Amino acid sequence: MSKLTAESGLAGASLHPGSRRSFSRFLRKYGPAYLMLLVPVCFFIVFSLYPIGWALKYVFYYYDGVMPERFTGMANLHRLMEDQIYWSSLWKQALFSLKILIELPLAFVLALFLYSRLRGRNIFRAMFVMPYILPGSTMALVMYILLNPYNGGLNQLLLKLHLIDQPVQFLSGGWTAFASGMVMDAWQNFGINMLFFLVGLTSIPKDVYESADMDGATGWKRMRYISIPMMGRILQMILFLSILGTLKSMGPFLVLTNGGPNNATELTFLYIFHQFFGGEAGSNYGYGATVAVVTALMLVVISAGYFKLTKKMDYQE
Image (tube, one colour):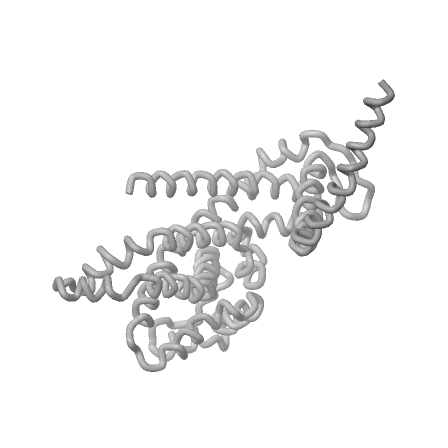
């Protein structure tokens, strides 16, 4: 018995140095890669997982940032179900997303225009992308100056053309303020979508177009039967990013109207912002977290439905 024990001990001792050597080789080979992953993983934990856990906790609390937090159970969810401003903001957010029906076709047409052998096309590319590069606050300030009812450029132009008799209060009326925010957001984002379309067009082999020219294909047929089908995956990506970005947008109205007049431009994420950082009723982190969590779940459902639909379309093709 003692002999067997001694032999097993010797075997374990003989394996131990080899195991340490293999572990050392593993560290030398993969250690730098895991070390490089450590920083983004830490950022993900601190800036993603922790805020999600924090928000899930405060769904069941009342906390205004000053007084001690107070457990309220399902009160925030009950309030959300009866909150007409929130449900109205969802409808306005969906209406606001209709701007992509103008933004994406315009970006595609400009991409086709810049894809051609146009002299100075790089200058035009920089001009169209510039609104996207500039901060949203800068773009909103430019838009505010243009729409100023007294000395704004747009009102002055309309008055000189005798299209209006008196200045239009673009940011004081409900539908005009909403339309102004839509125009600003489309103006700021169509440039980056144009670049995405341009990347898709340049990825198509030129010999495909040459073969189409030899077969007598016109410009419209080339776009319908070659460009759009061969850009299918890129088109899906552009549409998804545009929908998701639009559903999360709040910047134009935060600077231009701050949700007014009379909540006419209070989009969903602007409403969440006001709950956290003080609206008419002051800050309420618990209710803001509730609205944020429910809205995030809606976005997850929309994203999953979009991916399922596009996957089904790819399968049918």
